[in-house]
Length: 487
Ligand code: BES
Ligand code: MN
Ligand code: ZN
Image (cartoon, rainbow, N blue to C red):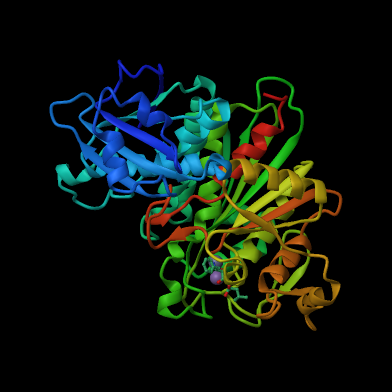
């Protein structure tokens, strides 16, 4: 899909499908179009269309121009933040593709400045997404809005929005791929493709190299699978002298059976999504290629399949990681923190000023925050605030949870090793974050994003479709571009 700016000219619409975003009780935009569609105002009144949030109206105008009018309610104007417009644009695109439109022109009474244009572009692109590459869909049901015009849109905002959304769409695509397609080796190939397209350095370490690098924890998690683990390292370098160095780390469990502590069937379902952190990192890199912030960004992915087999690592095993610390395995299903521990140790050796990891880490986080808010943990208040600021701009909700509870931290003590890999059910998201913290250098500002529970949706809504959400890609890109000089 392409998104373009169009002149705000009622007489010369670019598309035969007009999409109107309407605030509650608003008449302004409708009045603009009353000459083109005399019945529109009256019909809206008849249907008691009041612009309530997410309400929709479709009107076919055969023989008229435009030939279709779609209206989506935004709710009250004073509550309309960027995300309301993002959702509105997505609902228009979904409605337009349902009626077979190939293009769409979006109108709203609020003049689209840079921020609003960005949100509309993001919503349109994300709303148009479907994962149907393995399914035969009849042409007429496919629904494909190829072009969206934003009336009065601001070019740089539309472009920024398109780049950020495309990053997130790549994350969705990768996360949606099943475990028989994406394994540690094919994930590394995908990373190399992203690197090639964006001109990034990319190095992939194989299992022998991981052995030499003493990445015992990543190796242990991956040893049960016939596809051995990989460490993927991408680097984005700006053209000018970088203003700083940041490392992003993604959990890349290509499928999580739970290992010998095998998951029951209903919990194993959707565990192809356990590589969403990695998918988000690759999506972020796709965005970086053209957003070009003036900082050096390292992307690190520990890719492994947590499989069941005679070579699987076991409960009771004691494993030494790259940092030298030993870990007693209590539960092989707490595998993400093990792979992340080794990759975080490696990340710190690159001497970045900031490390951010993103992971579908704990069911406990999903229980705590629900399916529409992700967890944020940090050892640095100002970093946490910066990420929450980016999250407010992106519309992806994050909520900070604590890691300073020293009594709870004791749950990670082991009688036989430096740490044990689980801290019990209560506060499970917190102890997982504390486990990660033990592998970080104290002087490095670090944040951990737990996206378990928001990585995947059973039903489409707003700008999400069924399946992978790519959650976090927009927030990380917003965060990274905000580190440059003010726009
Ligand atoms: N990948 C899961 C976490 C998860 C759960 C992600 C639900 C997405 C949706 C993780 O590896 C896991 O299994 N965590 C365990 C940890 C426990 C054994 C301490 C969990 O959350 O139950
Ligand atoms: Mn697990
Ligand atoms: Zn997992």
